[in-house]
Image (cartoon, helix red, strand yellow):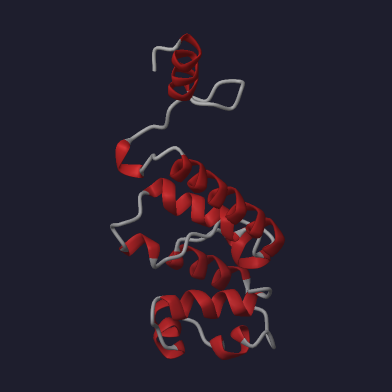
Length: 147
């Protein structure tokens, strides 16, 4: 979504609206030209679109501001924090997203190694040695022969 027109089309399509429906709802014309980037909408239309879809005008104009996917608001499985995190991830460059994906994979692998599941709650604190307190206690017991 690198143009204003593509962002407008994305928002409209995310609500499953036809061009005619959106033009009628917001009382303007030429939506096809806006979406094809052959004509730029005026500030009043930009503001109407931003308010209707609950996005910032900055995001609508530049693509560089928080835009929460309108479909996420209707899905009760996502918390507000998860929606905000997803919106932040969408602002990243593709190579930055790959790094985030790797970081998440690493965190999940660490849980797997330590036998920790999400349902078990918080993970054990990690000491400066990189071991959990349980691991350090077990190592200390082995050293003392009390394992």
